Image 1: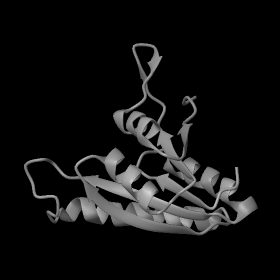
Image 2: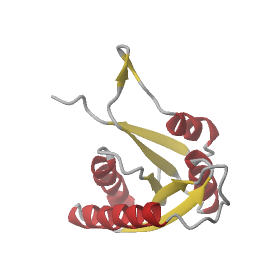
Image 3: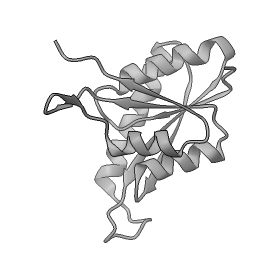
Amino acid sequence: MHLKRILVALSGASVDPDVIRYAVTLAKPTKAELIGVHVIEVRWNLPLDAVLENELNRGEELLDSAVKIAEQAGGKLETELLQAREASAAILDTARERQVDLVIVGMPYRNRMGKTYVGKTVQDVYVGATCAVLAYRQEQPQ
C-alpha cells in the first residue's frame, strides 16, 4: 500500500503518544502527510457550534502535545480540532474529505469481564470507513 495521507484520531487517551509514533513510522517511507484530529463531542441538548471553552482548551493542548511528539519522532503532524455529535462521524467525514489512505485509531487497554473491550468509536470507524483502518491496541499494563 502506497500511503499518501494518514489520519490519526486522537482522543486524549494514554495510547495517543504510541499511535502518533507509529503513524510517523508508517508515514516516513512514502513521505505521507499526517493529519491528527481531535473531536469534541457536543451533547444533543446544545447547539453544534456551542462554545465549550474547557473542551476547546483541552483539545488545543492535546493537539499541541501531539505535534511535539510527532516532531520528536521525526515527523510532521498537521492538526485539526473538530466539533460533532459523534466522534466517529467526524473522523469518517474528515477521512473522506481529505481523501486519506489510512485511518489510525488508538485503543487503550481495557478489559471487561475478561474480554477485550472495543469502544463504539473504533467499531463505527471500522465499519464506516472507505479506506484502510488500523486500530492500535495498547499493551496490557505490567
